Length: 393
Image (cartoon, rainbow, N blue to C red):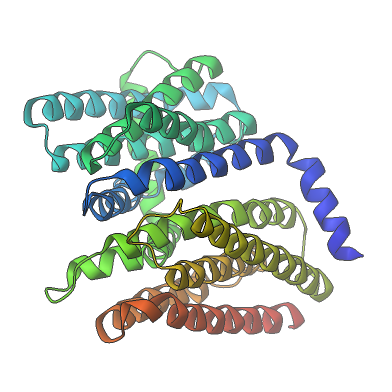
């Protein structure tokens, strides 16, 4: 019964956000079915690698500022406007990068544009997160809707085209949200000092969280990053497509994990029965996702809607791996609110990232995700055990 109570609570309290997340998931599904399979040979692998660089690079260049902004602003519009200089600087760099792309028109300049767009999106998201949770949800989800629709209409077939469309979609939503929330203010010397002070503060207090965020994203995209790092191996469209499907599953599964984190963060302490209940609900949801995911893939295969290079076994293993990673993220959130040292969650992520590299280097492609699923489950179980000990003590 506790599981059903949590599910009802999840759907009632995240109705609007859940609608956007589901819409974003459907947009990703549209990309998987109607756009990515029609790309030129090798271009899907190029796009997934470039998008991975964009996601990690966009986080890295902010130096953790986006993680500190919600705490510094605390829902006050006056404080938010003091950081608008950071948004304006991001937009200026994006404009310069776009001009560079128009001149060079190569994939490297497109990647740079995406990196800066994602960094700007994260900075703006940190600014509005406590001002307007609905605007935060729009920033996270609506760009994918625009991107998928534009890619389908234009029938994009190259990585460069997709990167540019994704960057432009992000910029459009940023402009709308920033003006709707009225957080832009005229640049000033005082605001510049405040921004620099926030960067220094972030380096002092949030660098471990930044490292944790980067290592988690590295683990989630390790099957994209590692093959490109080995001279004897190369990223294939088969793996890129499986990662794209798994990532869509992960984004959907994180709705529950993020919501439980928001609720647990408000509680003075976490009880063992709360931990067990959260894990049981997470397991139930993940089982549902795995079943639905595998069933959907089978249906698409029967309808000849999957690309020729896809491998059903690899895709199903990918769905399992990313579902387990949702459980890991849930346990990570529990450990944070239980005041466990950040390194307790960072080390497992780094271990998982390295383990994926070893798997990619030494094992056949067809069992990469299967082996990684075993490692991910073991890491999640260890984190669960450590958290249980912390709560009991």
